Image 1 (cartoon, rainbow, N blue to C red):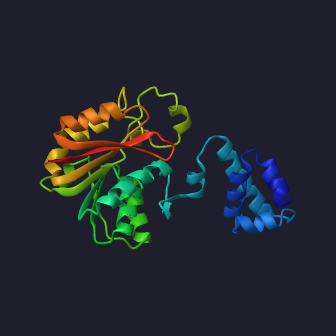
Image 2: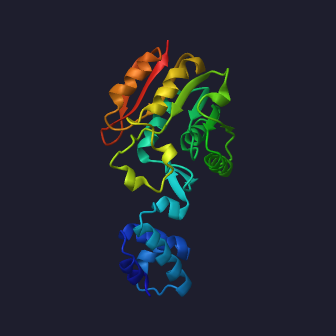
Length: 263
């Protein structure tokens, strides 16, 4: 089977097929594109067709590859962690604008947010909290690969940082509602990192109800949320006693991050 035949037989998007074929063949996508009539070894063909079968079943490409690019960094991912989304880079942008001396990343997952901030601001002290031990190990592996010193802690939300205060608290918490029509398409990702009660706001309620005790004066809380949730999230931030409450849109123009600062 040639490269072009394998891609045509894959039954998936051609761009994704080239990416998966390059992975199993050990070649670059450019070299595959330059030699479409090149014969591929039998073992490579079998491995490729196995991957494309999983892709047709809905397994995300990031899980098949075991990695995902986020903020220009190549991060390890697996089914224990949510796949980092491009829209979450807005949260990193907003964090970097504030140049915090200390940052708390709640529900760090793959470590994407805390790692991206630490990579860009090496002097910032980053504490990353995660309740799922498998996710925490993945985040540690990503930080180690990039030689970043991050304080990873195992526990739920603020439990591992009792008595501490930070210049910035950020989180991309679960915010999908039970019964959301998009959930079937997300079935391969950890549901605990996605779903948060009937309206998707249970985790955000829990964070905002306690956050004041963990912010230094003038420190910010920044939360990613879903489409149409900004009004409710802003109300929860206001109820937490924060001010200068603002919502920022992502590149698609969707209200994506809301935050406020302690007086």
